[in-house]
Length: 148
Image 1 (spheres, rainbow, N blue to C red):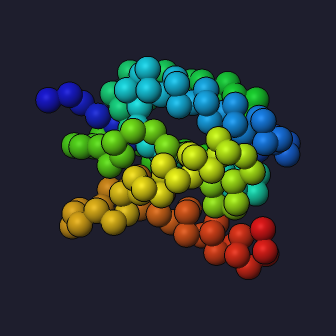
Image 2 (image 1 turned 180 degrees about the vertical axis):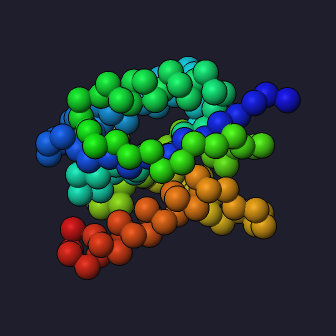
């Protein structure tokens, strides 16, 4: 059986990102993560990022090294890193709590909403999935209260 790990973190955007920059992050991450067997989800909301990734320990190390070097964000806080028995995400997604600002983002959002594993009937919920659900719900409530 292949060994799998999961890692979740939050970070702050280093500056206000343009629509084109967010689209670029989405396209680059989707390609790189697919090539390296990474699944998970990245949320972006009001200058904050949350991501949970799943894959082999080697792939997690490779992807996280790129994450740490990225100039688009900083103040990375690792929330958890654990071994897992199975993936919670079939592939890698990007979700937008606030309204997407481009067609690329709208398509990514629709893909995420269709694949959202929260509706899975499993009695076991992973830490990564719980963190993803928490951040999605928290940021959505904050966005709704501020009218973003």
